[in-house]
Image (cartoon, rainbow, N blue to C red):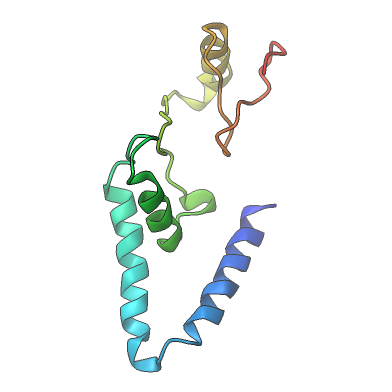
Length: 116
């Protein structure tokens, strides 16, 4: 499913949920969503086994951190920043060391050398 479809579907769900919020509280709900997004941008993710990992995931979802706005750092994962031109070589180096390269869903992706 592409990002536009995810965002459109999530936007529709949020709009439907806001219909049940009394009009005088709309501003507070919007501020809560903005605060969750800001907090998710500033707070580093907890480690995977932490009791805060689920809370962090809920906070990022409420803050609409999806698609291109999604945080690159997630509980239990790290990110190695390399220039775009070096990305294939970096993936190959990591895979050669026996470390699985994860896709966007946190699952090992199929490497260039045929290893999972």
